[in-house]
Length: 395
View 1 (cartoon, rainbow, N blue to C red):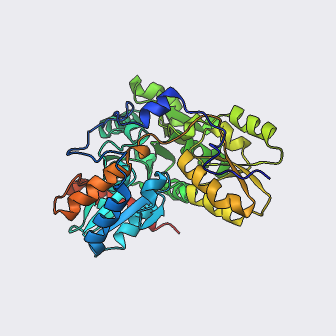
View 2: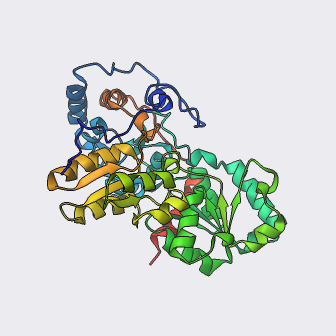
View 3: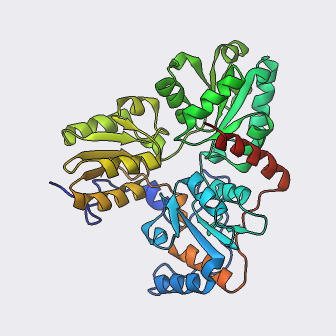
């Protein structure tokens, strides 16, 4: 039986773009791209691990480090808790004694942590350029314009916005202000059930694939019930008749990682590994989800592998850092875990947070200097929190 280890690179080849984005250049698809202020330690510094430990020890209970599943191993090593974005934000809220919340993830996640934590707590993002291309695909101005288009079509008053957790605080606030709620990849169906009890249509932001997959796969709608609103086209590229005839108005956004997987990826891995189970995230394209054996959130993926029997084979369609970690974890148990695609699929902005950035942030805090604080203004926080609270109240 083949066991995948770090010495075997999961049968993937890095592309030039992937190698570029794993460096220090700004993310070309992000609205951000802010260089980290101050002097970063060299990534070749042999004392980085010791420096991180020393700074964390000096800070003691004043710091709480959150590590998203997609982070590098070198960063995860110092995380007090790991998880998906919403779990981590809630973990931060449950740690009121921590003065500093260091969020090793991306910008929208740190915003959510700031919304849910106390006013006296300070949320720090080690690299301000760690954005999210999906979240950046929906701006407050674009969504406000979309709502005007829906009003002109006569359907705004029967449309409920549902925004994925992977959205900016501004979009979460818009959602709360207009009677909607937030969802995660694990409770999207429950969120949509609630939304359709409030209105006749849903505006789903910003990931079209999660919205489509939930509506069609989990709720029995047809693809014809869904239309895609493109913010870069007049009226979203849709007629008033198309908007009035749709149940799901999907924002034209996607995850740059999960959107790379294709039906060819699924067919190829089935040919290479007979008997393989294909397990993918619902942010993947509809045809990939339809061809998979299992579909679910990051936590679902982990739990499924934990419960899998020895000798089983799994091709996972999600971010490569996590897949490599799962391969190393479950390989010794006799479970073969491989990456669904042959090419690298790191989350480039997640990978911006490396050990030098973490050391710089921790050492700065230990010296009494607050860096890279993420703050959501009071009005935005109020409406965003309302949308989150509606989600938390779901049965």
